[in-house]
Image 1 (cartoon, rainbow, N blue to C red):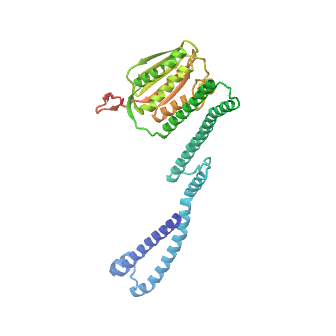
Image 2: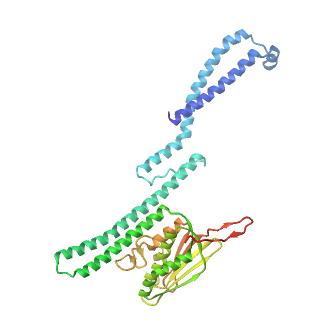
Image 3: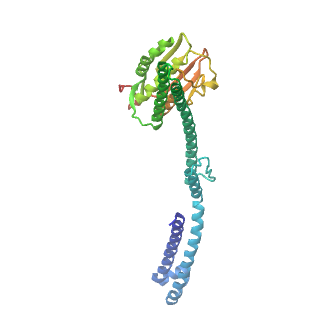
Length: 368
């Protein structure tokens, strides 16, 4: 049975039960009560035999009327009560068919159905934005993965048509193109892992992650003539050590690569605020506009425009940083420096818990 039919039968049954109880009460009152009580209540004493003979058929007719009235009225009431649910059901069917732009926009007072409809509209809006972002990301990723494959195909075609071509140069170029494709694939996997939140939160020290990232990227910095300066104390955080290390490495790598050609500088600082821990990475470089900086966290974007086949990376560095920050309940702020370059600030919640009496427990044990 449908919900509307169940509600209709429930309304009718309740009305019949109430009517039957009222009739039974009247029947017992006139049949059992003494004559003086009846006379005091209704002013006269009816003939009990005549009353029994005429009361029951009349009450049967009343019950039949109550049944019909309960069924008709219950169906109307159930239909009006369930009308918002029908709109929600229609919107659900449209969403299941792939149309995420439809909204219920239920009017009226804020009852349970209105709250359900508003929550469903909010879910549809988030799903629509997420699907659009995923489609855009998939299109960009497909384009960027196709580029190295097309380059490899061209190089192989040249080698096939010209057997006397220098194979050493060909191998070097193929190696560079293949390395770029591998880097892009690994970056996509990191971004996918961050999106799925499939990681265990552990205590980590951002200052130690900074040291590890700088140690890894120091040869690149020396090759490009970039000086790295670090400062800060123990910076406790709670999250995935691997993802947070990836985030730190991407920030430092981005600061090294997008810097002045010679005598560039990178400043890395970790600090602790009342409720957050802060990782700040600054670098010298070209002056950038606020409009351009606002697009740097989009996939496959760089400060110099679309990504190219150079050492500037695969265009996912800051996009990965943004996503890792989000899944760790933090925030990412990127602003241009007045003298050129960028200032990137990551804020993460402090994994401290207040002791009884308001004293903070600042005991920290890095999971490293």
